[in-house]
Image (cartoon, rainbow, N blue to C red; front, side, top):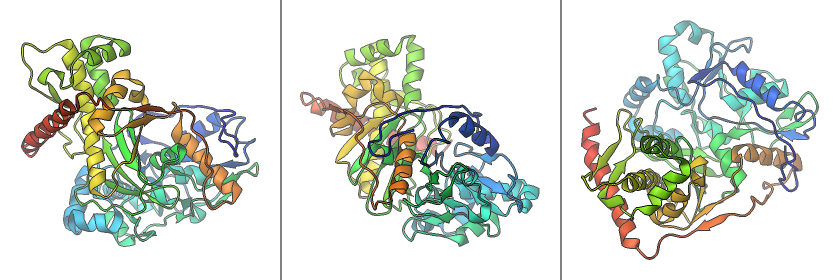
Length: 452
Protein backbone atom coordinates (compact mmCIF):
# COMPACT_ATOMS: atom_id res chain seq x y z
CA UNK A 1 0.00 0.00 0.00
CA UNK A 2 1.37 3.41 -0.96
CA UNK A 3 0.49 7.05 -0.45
CA UNK A 4 -1.06 8.18 -3.74
CA UNK A 5 0.62 11.58 -3.93
CA UNK A 6 4.18 10.55 -3.12
CA UNK A 7 4.41 6.81 -3.68
CA UNK A 8 5.65 6.30 -0.12
CA UNK A 9 5.11 2.71 0.99
CA UNK A 10 2.94 2.71 4.11
CA UNK A 11 2.10 -1.00 4.43
CA UNK A 12 2.57 -4.30 2.63
CA UNK A 13 1.52 -7.93 2.64
CA UNK A 14 2.82 -11.14 1.13
CA UNK A 15 1.51 -14.62 0.39
CA UNK A 16 2.74 -17.58 -1.62
CA UNK A 17 0.95 -19.60 -4.26
CA UNK A 18 1.84 -22.94 -5.88
CA UNK A 19 4.97 -23.36 -8.00
CA UNK A 20 4.90 -25.16 -11.32
CA UNK A 21 3.75 -24.49 -14.86
CA UNK A 22 0.01 -24.64 -14.22
CA UNK A 23 -2.06 -23.34 -11.35
CA UNK A 24 -5.71 -23.23 -10.25
CA UNK A 25 -6.68 -19.54 -10.45
CA UNK A 26 -8.47 -19.91 -7.12
CA UNK A 27 -5.02 -20.23 -5.50
CA UNK A 28 -4.17 -16.71 -6.72
CA UNK A 29 -7.40 -15.37 -5.25
CA UNK A 30 -6.65 -17.00 -1.90
CA UNK A 31 -3.12 -15.56 -1.97
CA UNK A 32 -4.45 -12.10 -2.84
CA UNK A 33 -6.91 -12.25 0.05
CA UNK A 34 -4.15 -13.32 2.44
CA UNK A 35 -1.64 -10.71 1.25
CA UNK A 36 -4.32 -8.01 1.18
CA UNK A 37 -5.79 -8.74 4.58
CA UNK A 38 -6.17 -5.43 6.36
CA UNK A 39 -5.04 -3.58 3.22
CA UNK A 40 -7.76 -4.04 0.60
CA UNK A 41 -10.49 -2.69 2.86
CA UNK A 42 -8.40 0.46 3.55
CA UNK A 43 -7.40 1.19 -0.04
CA UNK A 44 -9.01 3.95 -2.10
CA UNK A 45 -7.89 2.31 -5.34
CA UNK A 46 -6.31 -1.00 -6.34
CA UNK A 47 -4.72 -2.58 -9.42
CA UNK A 48 -3.31 -6.02 -10.14
CA UNK A 49 -0.02 -6.65 -11.93
CA UNK A 50 0.35 -10.30 -12.88
CA UNK A 51 2.44 -12.72 -14.89
CA UNK A 52 1.83 -12.44 -18.61
CA UNK A 53 0.53 -15.02 -21.09
CA UNK A 54 -1.21 -17.41 -18.70
CA UNK A 55 -4.34 -19.07 -20.11
CA UNK A 56 -7.44 -18.89 -17.91
CA UNK A 57 -10.43 -20.53 -19.64
CA UNK A 58 -14.00 -20.23 -18.38
CA UNK A 59 -17.25 -22.01 -19.22
CA UNK A 60 -20.70 -20.53 -19.83
CA UNK A 61 -21.21 -20.15 -16.06
CA UNK A 62 -17.87 -18.29 -15.59
CA UNK A 63 -16.38 -21.34 -13.90
CA UNK A 64 -12.71 -22.17 -14.49
CA UNK A 65 -12.53 -25.11 -16.90
CA UNK A 66 -9.03 -26.33 -15.98
CA UNK A 67 -5.95 -25.06 -14.12
CA UNK A 68 -4.34 -22.13 -15.89
CA UNK A 69 -1.36 -22.87 -18.11
CA UNK A 70 1.37 -20.38 -17.15
CA UNK A 71 3.94 -18.49 -19.20
CA UNK A 72 6.67 -21.03 -18.35
CA UNK A 73 4.65 -24.04 -19.54
CA UNK A 74 6.33 -25.23 -22.77
CA UNK A 75 4.00 -28.08 -23.75
CA UNK A 76 2.57 -25.93 -26.58
CA UNK A 77 5.90 -25.61 -28.43
CA UNK A 78 4.70 -27.93 -31.26
CA UNK A 79 1.55 -25.83 -31.66
CA UNK A 80 3.68 -22.68 -31.90
CA UNK A 81 5.68 -24.25 -34.72
CA UNK A 82 2.57 -25.49 -36.51
CA UNK A 83 0.64 -22.23 -36.30
CA UNK A 84 3.63 -20.29 -37.55
CA UNK A 85 4.20 -22.62 -40.48
CA UNK A 86 0.56 -22.95 -41.52
CA UNK A 87 -0.52 -19.33 -41.17
CA UNK A 88 1.91 -17.00 -42.85
CA UNK A 89 5.24 -17.54 -41.17
CA UNK A 90 7.09 -15.35 -38.65
CA UNK A 91 6.77 -12.16 -40.68
CA UNK A 92 2.98 -12.37 -40.85
CA UNK A 93 2.57 -13.06 -37.12
CA UNK A 94 4.98 -10.27 -36.18
CA UNK A 95 3.16 -7.90 -38.49
CA UNK A 96 -0.27 -8.80 -37.12
CA UNK A 97 0.50 -9.18 -33.41
CA UNK A 98 4.04 -7.92 -32.76
CA UNK A 99 5.06 -11.47 -31.81
CA UNK A 100 6.66 -14.50 -33.37
CA UNK A 101 4.88 -17.38 -31.68
CA UNK A 102 6.61 -19.24 -28.87
CA UNK A 103 5.25 -21.65 -26.26
CA UNK A 104 4.95 -18.79 -23.76
CA UNK A 105 2.15 -17.01 -25.60
CA UNK A 106 -1.55 -17.60 -24.89
CA UNK A 107 -2.52 -18.38 -28.49
CA UNK A 108 -0.30 -21.46 -28.52
CA UNK A 109 -1.78 -22.69 -25.23
CA UNK A 110 -5.27 -22.42 -26.68
CA UNK A 111 -4.12 -24.48 -29.66
CA UNK A 112 -2.72 -27.10 -27.27
CA UNK A 113 -6.03 -27.19 -25.37
CA UNK A 114 -8.03 -27.68 -28.56
CA UNK A 115 -5.80 -30.52 -29.73
CA UNK A 116 -5.17 -32.33 -26.44
CA UNK A 117 -8.23 -31.72 -24.24
CA UNK A 118 -11.20 -31.52 -26.64
CA UNK A 119 -13.75 -31.97 -23.82
CA UNK A 120 -12.35 -28.99 -21.93
CA UNK A 121 -12.08 -27.01 -25.16
CA UNK A 122 -15.75 -27.68 -25.90
CA UNK A 123 -16.72 -26.23 -22.49
CA UNK A 124 -14.67 -23.08 -23.02
CA UNK A 125 -16.53 -19.90 -23.98
CA UNK A 126 -14.10 -17.21 -22.79
CA UNK A 127 -10.38 -16.80 -22.18
CA UNK A 128 -8.51 -14.24 -20.12
CA UNK A 129 -5.15 -13.65 -18.48
CA UNK A 130 -4.24 -14.09 -14.79
CA UNK A 131 -4.48 -10.39 -13.92
CA UNK A 132 -7.77 -10.12 -15.85
CA UNK A 133 -9.31 -12.91 -13.78
CA UNK A 134 -8.17 -11.38 -10.49
CA UNK A 135 -9.43 -7.94 -11.55
CA UNK A 136 -12.79 -9.49 -12.42
CA UNK A 137 -12.93 -11.14 -8.98
CA UNK A 138 -12.05 -7.88 -7.22
CA UNK A 139 -14.86 -6.13 -9.08
CA UNK A 140 -17.38 -8.90 -8.50
CA UNK A 141 -17.92 -8.85 -12.25
CA UNK A 142 -18.70 -11.52 -14.83
CA UNK A 143 -16.72 -12.65 -17.86
CA UNK A 144 -19.10 -10.67 -20.06
CA UNK A 145 -17.90 -7.51 -18.31
CA UNK A 146 -14.23 -8.52 -17.92
CA UNK A 147 -11.44 -6.10 -18.76
CA UNK A 148 -7.76 -6.28 -19.57
CA UNK A 149 -5.10 -3.74 -20.50
CA UNK A 150 -2.88 -3.11 -23.53
CA UNK A 151 0.26 -4.54 -21.97
CA UNK A 152 -1.16 -7.96 -21.14
CA UNK A 153 -3.29 -8.18 -24.30
CA UNK A 154 -0.11 -7.64 -26.30
CA UNK A 155 1.31 -10.93 -25.02
CA UNK A 156 -1.50 -13.16 -26.24
CA UNK A 157 -0.73 -13.61 -29.94
CA UNK A 158 -4.19 -12.36 -30.96
CA UNK A 159 -4.00 -8.62 -30.25
CA UNK A 160 -2.23 -5.94 -32.25
CA UNK A 161 -0.17 -3.24 -30.50
CA UNK A 162 -0.02 -1.35 -33.79
CA UNK A 163 -3.81 -1.10 -34.25
CA UNK A 164 -4.92 -1.43 -30.64
CA UNK A 165 -7.45 -4.15 -31.46
CA UNK A 166 -7.91 -7.91 -31.26
CA UNK A 167 -6.91 -9.96 -34.31
CA UNK A 168 -9.70 -12.52 -34.08
CA UNK A 169 -8.56 -14.41 -37.15
CA UNK A 170 -5.44 -15.37 -35.21
CA UNK A 171 -7.55 -16.51 -32.26
CA UNK A 172 -9.69 -18.68 -34.52
CA UNK A 173 -6.60 -20.16 -36.19
CA UNK A 174 -5.28 -21.11 -32.76
CA UNK A 175 -8.43 -22.44 -31.09
CA UNK A 176 -10.61 -23.40 -34.03
CA UNK A 177 -13.41 -20.95 -33.16
CA UNK A 178 -13.94 -17.54 -31.63
CA UNK A 179 -14.08 -16.89 -27.89
CA UNK A 180 -15.27 -14.08 -25.64
CA UNK A 181 -12.37 -11.79 -24.75
CA UNK A 182 -11.98 -9.05 -22.12
CA UNK A 183 -12.47 -5.45 -23.16
CA UNK A 184 -9.16 -3.58 -23.40
CA UNK A 185 -9.50 -0.65 -20.99
CA UNK A 186 -7.68 2.67 -21.14
CA UNK A 187 -4.51 2.78 -19.00
CA UNK A 188 -5.96 5.19 -16.42
CA UNK A 189 -9.57 3.97 -16.47
CA UNK A 190 -11.58 3.03 -13.40
CA UNK A 191 -13.09 -0.28 -14.50
CA UNK A 192 -15.14 -1.00 -11.38
CA UNK A 193 -15.25 -1.00 -7.58
CA UNK A 194 -14.35 -3.49 -4.89
CA UNK A 195 -16.89 -4.62 -2.31
CA UNK A 196 -15.50 -1.95 0.04
CA UNK A 197 -15.86 0.76 -2.62
CA UNK A 198 -12.26 1.13 -3.78
CA UNK A 199 -11.71 2.10 -7.40
CA UNK A 200 -10.29 -0.74 -9.52
CA UNK A 201 -7.80 0.16 -12.25
CA UNK A 202 -7.28 -2.09 -15.32
CA UNK A 203 -4.12 -3.75 -14.00
CA UNK A 204 -1.12 -4.68 -16.11
CA UNK A 205 1.36 -7.36 -17.05
CA UNK A 206 4.35 -7.79 -14.78
CA UNK A 207 7.01 -6.34 -17.07
CA UNK A 208 4.89 -3.32 -17.92
CA UNK A 209 4.21 -2.94 -14.21
CA UNK A 210 7.94 -2.87 -13.52
CA UNK A 211 8.47 -0.27 -16.26
CA UNK A 212 5.73 1.90 -14.77
CA UNK A 213 7.08 1.46 -11.25
CA UNK A 214 10.57 2.45 -12.39
CA UNK A 215 9.22 5.46 -14.27
CA UNK A 216 10.79 4.40 -17.57
CA UNK A 217 10.43 6.82 -20.44
CA UNK A 218 11.39 6.68 -24.14
CA UNK A 219 15.06 5.73 -24.47
CA UNK A 220 15.19 4.03 -21.06
CA UNK A 221 16.00 0.32 -20.98
CA UNK A 222 15.81 -1.92 -17.91
CA UNK A 223 17.93 -5.05 -17.61
CA UNK A 224 16.33 -7.31 -15.02
CA UNK A 225 18.58 -10.07 -13.69
CA UNK A 226 16.37 -12.55 -11.92
CA UNK A 227 16.54 -16.31 -12.37
CA UNK A 228 15.89 -15.47 -16.00
CA UNK A 229 16.78 -12.17 -17.63
CA UNK A 230 14.65 -9.55 -19.34
CA UNK A 231 15.69 -6.50 -21.29
CA UNK A 232 12.83 -4.10 -21.91
CA UNK A 233 12.34 -0.44 -22.71
CA UNK A 234 9.72 2.15 -23.48
CA UNK A 235 9.29 3.20 -27.10
CA UNK A 236 6.97 5.53 -29.00
CA UNK A 237 6.64 3.04 -31.88
CA UNK A 238 5.60 -0.65 -31.89
CA UNK A 239 8.14 -3.38 -32.61
CA UNK A 240 7.55 -6.15 -35.15
CA UNK A 241 10.67 -8.32 -35.13
CA UNK A 242 10.29 -11.26 -37.51
CA UNK A 243 13.40 -12.88 -36.02
CA UNK A 244 11.50 -13.37 -32.78
CA UNK A 245 14.29 -11.94 -30.64
CA UNK A 246 12.25 -8.92 -29.61
CA UNK A 247 8.66 -9.33 -28.42
CA UNK A 248 6.58 -6.32 -29.47
CA UNK A 249 4.61 -5.71 -26.28
CA UNK A 250 2.75 -2.59 -25.23
CA UNK A 251 3.39 -0.74 -21.99
CA UNK A 252 0.96 0.43 -19.31
CA UNK A 253 0.80 4.08 -20.37
CA UNK A 254 -0.17 4.04 -24.05
CA UNK A 255 3.33 3.55 -25.44
CA UNK A 256 5.12 0.32 -26.36
CA UNK A 257 7.41 -2.06 -24.49
CA UNK A 258 9.73 -4.10 -26.74
CA UNK A 259 11.22 -6.92 -24.66
CA UNK A 260 13.89 -9.59 -24.92
CA UNK A 261 13.79 -12.54 -22.53
CA UNK A 262 16.66 -14.91 -21.71
CA UNK A 263 16.21 -18.05 -19.64
CA UNK A 264 19.62 -17.79 -18.00
CA UNK A 265 20.67 -14.89 -15.80
CA UNK A 266 21.17 -15.09 -12.02
CA UNK A 267 21.00 -18.89 -12.22
CA UNK A 268 24.31 -18.79 -14.12
CA UNK A 269 26.05 -17.07 -11.22
CA UNK A 270 24.37 -19.41 -8.72
CA UNK A 271 25.56 -22.46 -10.66
CA UNK A 272 29.19 -21.34 -10.77
CA UNK A 273 29.09 -20.19 -7.14
CA UNK A 274 27.97 -23.70 -6.17
CA UNK A 275 30.62 -25.32 -8.36
CA UNK A 276 33.30 -23.17 -6.76
CA UNK A 277 31.89 -23.75 -3.27
CA UNK A 278 31.87 -20.09 -2.26
CA UNK A 279 29.49 -17.51 -0.82
CA UNK A 280 28.05 -14.64 -2.84
CA UNK A 281 30.69 -12.27 -1.46
CA UNK A 282 33.54 -14.72 -2.11
CA UNK A 283 32.30 -15.27 -5.65
CA UNK A 284 32.32 -11.52 -6.34
CA UNK A 285 35.83 -11.24 -4.94
CA UNK A 286 37.05 -14.06 -7.19
CA UNK A 287 35.50 -12.53 -10.30
CA UNK A 288 36.92 -9.08 -9.61
CA UNK A 289 40.40 -10.51 -8.92
CA UNK A 290 40.63 -11.77 -12.51
CA UNK A 291 41.53 -9.57 -15.46
CA UNK A 292 38.91 -8.59 -18.07
CA UNK A 293 38.59 -11.48 -20.51
CA UNK A 294 38.89 -14.12 -17.75
CA UNK A 295 42.26 -15.43 -18.91
CA UNK A 296 40.83 -16.31 -22.32
CA UNK A 297 37.74 -18.13 -20.99
CA UNK A 298 34.44 -17.39 -22.69
CA UNK A 299 31.16 -18.77 -21.35
CA UNK A 300 28.08 -19.28 -23.50
CA UNK A 301 25.58 -19.39 -20.60
CA UNK A 302 22.74 -21.46 -22.09
CA UNK A 303 22.71 -23.79 -19.09
CA UNK A 304 19.03 -24.74 -19.29
CA UNK A 305 18.48 -24.17 -22.99
CA UNK A 306 17.75 -20.68 -24.19
CA UNK A 307 14.83 -18.62 -25.43
CA UNK A 308 16.83 -15.76 -26.96
CA UNK A 309 18.33 -16.92 -29.22
CA UNK A 310 15.89 -19.80 -29.71
CA UNK A 311 17.92 -22.83 -28.62
CA UNK A 312 15.65 -24.82 -26.30
CA UNK A 313 17.93 -27.85 -26.22
CA UNK A 314 21.25 -26.03 -25.86
CA UNK A 315 23.66 -26.40 -22.95
CA UNK A 316 26.41 -24.17 -21.60
CA UNK A 317 29.78 -23.99 -23.37
CA UNK A 318 33.14 -22.85 -21.96
CA UNK A 319 35.70 -22.00 -24.62
CA UNK A 320 39.42 -21.36 -24.12
CA UNK A 321 39.86 -23.65 -21.12
CA UNK A 322 43.54 -24.48 -20.48
CA UNK A 323 45.66 -25.84 -17.63
CA UNK A 324 46.38 -22.23 -16.69
CA UNK A 325 42.75 -21.45 -15.87
CA UNK A 326 42.04 -20.32 -12.32
CA UNK A 327 39.05 -20.17 -9.99
CA UNK A 328 39.12 -16.42 -10.48
CA UNK A 329 38.92 -16.84 -14.27
CA UNK A 330 35.93 -19.20 -13.96
CA UNK A 331 34.04 -16.74 -11.78
CA UNK A 332 34.86 -13.85 -14.11
CA UNK A 333 33.81 -15.84 -17.19
CA UNK A 334 30.45 -16.58 -15.57
CA UNK A 335 29.75 -12.89 -14.96
CA UNK A 336 31.01 -11.77 -18.38
CA UNK A 337 29.06 -14.51 -20.18
CA UNK A 338 25.81 -13.78 -18.37
CA UNK A 339 26.13 -10.06 -19.04
CA UNK A 340 27.10 -10.61 -22.67
CA UNK A 341 23.85 -12.53 -23.18
CA UNK A 342 21.96 -9.49 -21.89
CA UNK A 343 24.06 -7.25 -24.15
CA UNK A 344 22.68 -9.33 -27.03
CA UNK A 345 19.26 -8.19 -25.85
CA UNK A 346 20.32 -4.55 -25.93
CA UNK A 347 21.63 -5.02 -29.47
CA UNK A 348 18.37 -6.64 -30.57
CA UNK A 349 16.44 -3.71 -29.10
CA UNK A 350 18.67 -1.25 -30.97
CA UNK A 351 17.92 -3.11 -34.21
CA UNK A 352 14.24 -2.36 -33.56
CA UNK A 353 14.97 1.34 -33.16
CA UNK A 354 15.39 1.55 -29.37
CA UNK A 355 18.98 2.50 -28.63
CA UNK A 356 19.49 2.69 -24.89
CA UNK A 357 20.22 6.19 -23.62
CA UNK A 358 19.94 5.00 -20.03
CA UNK A 359 20.19 1.45 -18.66
CA UNK A 360 18.69 0.56 -15.28
CA UNK A 361 19.91 -2.63 -13.67
CA UNK A 362 17.37 -4.40 -11.44
CA UNK A 363 16.66 -7.90 -10.12
CA UNK A 364 18.42 -10.08 -7.59
CA UNK A 365 21.78 -10.29 -9.38
CA UNK A 366 22.01 -6.49 -9.57
CA UNK A 367 23.15 -6.63 -5.93
CA UNK A 368 26.34 -8.46 -6.98
CA UNK A 369 29.39 -6.19 -6.75
CA UNK A 370 31.01 -8.05 -9.65
CA UNK A 371 27.94 -7.56 -11.83
CA UNK A 372 27.83 -3.86 -10.98
CA UNK A 373 31.51 -3.32 -11.72
CA UNK A 374 31.56 -5.25 -15.01
CA UNK A 375 28.14 -4.46 -16.52
CA UNK A 376 28.79 -0.88 -17.75
CA UNK A 377 31.80 -1.93 -19.79
CA UNK A 378 30.09 -4.98 -21.31
CA UNK A 379 26.96 -2.94 -22.13
CA UNK A 380 28.99 -0.02 -23.45
CA UNK A 381 26.95 2.57 -21.52
CA UNK A 382 26.77 3.86 -17.97
CA UNK A 383 24.34 1.94 -15.79
CA UNK A 384 22.05 3.08 -12.99
CA UNK A 385 21.00 0.79 -10.13
CA UNK A 386 17.82 2.02 -8.42
CA UNK A 387 17.05 1.04 -4.84
CA UNK A 388 15.89 -2.54 -4.34
CA UNK A 389 12.09 -2.62 -4.44
CA UNK A 390 9.08 -4.59 -5.69
CA UNK A 391 8.77 -2.53 -8.87
CA UNK A 392 5.98 -4.65 -10.36
CA UNK A 393 3.85 -4.00 -7.28
CA UNK A 394 4.84 -0.33 -7.29
CA UNK A 395 3.76 -0.12 -10.92
CA UNK A 396 0.33 -1.52 -10.04
CA UNK A 397 0.05 0.96 -7.18
CA UNK A 398 1.04 3.82 -9.47
CA UNK A 399 -1.62 2.79 -11.98
CA UNK A 400 -4.23 2.69 -9.21
CA UNK A 401 -3.21 6.18 -8.05
CA UNK A 402 -3.34 7.39 -11.67
CA UNK A 403 -6.87 6.06 -12.17
CA UNK A 404 -7.95 7.58 -8.87
CA UNK A 405 -6.56 11.00 -9.80
CA UNK A 406 -8.25 11.26 -13.18
CA UNK A 407 -5.05 12.87 -14.55
CA UNK A 408 -3.87 12.46 -18.13
CA UNK A 409 -0.42 11.19 -17.12
CA UNK A 410 0.71 8.88 -14.32
CA UNK A 411 2.09 10.35 -11.09
CA UNK A 412 5.81 11.04 -10.96
CA UNK A 413 7.13 9.31 -7.87
CA UNK A 414 10.76 9.42 -6.81
CA UNK A 415 12.38 5.99 -6.71
CA UNK A 416 15.06 7.07 -4.26
CA UNK A 417 18.79 7.45 -4.75
CA UNK A 418 20.26 5.49 -7.66
CA UNK A 419 23.84 4.32 -7.95
CA UNK A 420 25.46 5.42 -11.21
CA UNK A 421 28.06 2.97 -12.51
CA UNK A 422 30.67 3.89 -15.13
CA UNK A 423 32.64 1.51 -17.33
CA UNK A 424 36.37 0.89 -17.06
CA UNK A 425 37.81 3.60 -19.29
CA UNK A 426 41.34 2.31 -18.74
CA UNK A 427 40.83 -0.96 -20.64
CA UNK A 428 38.05 -0.40 -23.20
CA UNK A 429 39.77 -2.65 -25.72
CA UNK A 430 39.63 -5.58 -23.34
CA UNK A 431 35.86 -5.28 -23.03
CA UNK A 432 35.39 -4.98 -26.78
CA UNK A 433 37.32 -8.22 -27.07
CA UNK A 434 35.04 -9.87 -24.50
CA UNK A 435 31.94 -8.99 -26.50
CA UNK A 436 33.56 -10.01 -29.80
CA UNK A 437 34.76 -13.36 -28.40
CA UNK A 438 31.34 -14.03 -26.95
CA UNK A 439 29.64 -13.23 -30.29
CA UNK A 440 32.07 -15.48 -32.13
CA UNK A 441 31.32 -18.43 -29.82
CA UNK A 442 27.58 -17.76 -30.01
CA UNK A 443 27.63 -17.74 -33.80
CA UNK A 444 29.93 -20.76 -34.05
CA UNK A 445 27.61 -22.84 -31.90
CA UNK A 446 24.53 -21.84 -33.90
CA UNK A 447 25.34 -24.67 -36.31
CA UNK A 448 25.34 -27.10 -33.38
CA UNK A 449 21.86 -25.91 -32.38
CA UNK A 450 20.52 -26.84 -35.80
CA UNK A 451 21.35 -30.49 -35.06
CA UNK A 452 19.97 -30.60 -31.51
